[in-house]
Image 1: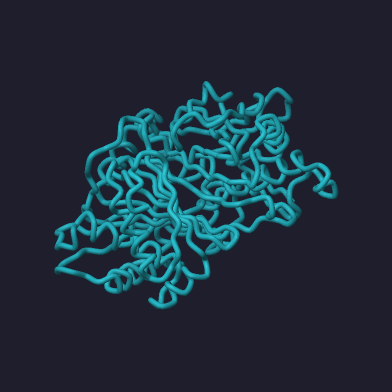
Image 2: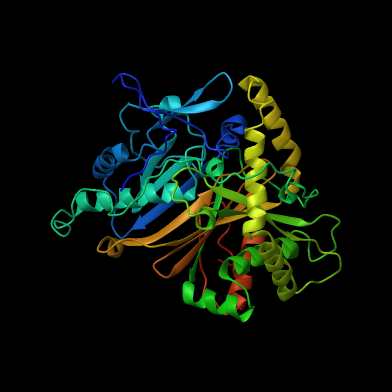
Length: 440
């Protein structure tokens, strides 16, 4: 079942294209995007067989027409950016030839804001965040996987019809606006004081370091339960602990480690929108004495997250964000001036965040397609002030944690996996060529 919001306006004349407003979060990304800050994320799947470029292109061509959220080109209006339906051919599938999360030049991509590449057994979907968040990207990737496998295995999957998954909802509502209640003053989430900013020797311009960790889900559950916290709290807490031990060397700091954690709002507001619908909370830890133990840090971080991930607090964050967009005094200001203001506000707040860690969740693939899939993982591009980010995906009983960084030093990532290993979890680590193989 496909649902499209009233914001998608279909003109009567056939030569007129559908258009849509950007959702509340998406308004930020075109204002701050650059080649060094692409705002592009990747969700990738590793199959158990090599990828056929020809069949993958066919799969993209077949799936794209059903996903209007991905058939969009961004336009610049007088007061706001907006999305207009793109009637050009689907972007060309190519073998991967650059680092993950690089800037999407829409003029070289048939004016689409996503791309699909492949390498050996891996299919990569990269999306400009103004289109959708990880939830929407994952929906598209899963349907792309199913269609590709139907083409690659016509005999084995002969009983499967060439259609979208039954019950799939492609809702295009702006759930921020729908769930907006009362205007809010500046949310506590945006009052974080200056944080620890990780610095160090950087890789060559344009290079991104990648480190994957493969962790058995049942063992991670046991480790988190041992500490009396959830898996997400455990993973974020170990990440913060690793920054504390490796970057701060276990010492006192007059600034906190602030780890940004995106929260999917759909379950809190009963939404199925394929547009962006998430909020940011901050896992905070400030070492005010020497030598905090892992348990100390996990307790502080988990408490910080529990206090913020509540319906009441998320209401405040959502309403504060939307109230700024709907401010009647800001609406008539020309977009070029809005962009200057948005960039200024964004740049003034980047020193309040140390790093980001996101959890895409447990990805369930349909039978019989699941038997062809090895792993799914996610990767985040770098942003100003944040040169180290982590992303977590669970698939087929394995948690895949992926760190991306512009730093040559990988001590924080290594500490993360060693800490988890010391907690009784079997860890397998894989990297690209930016780091030494020592200790891996």
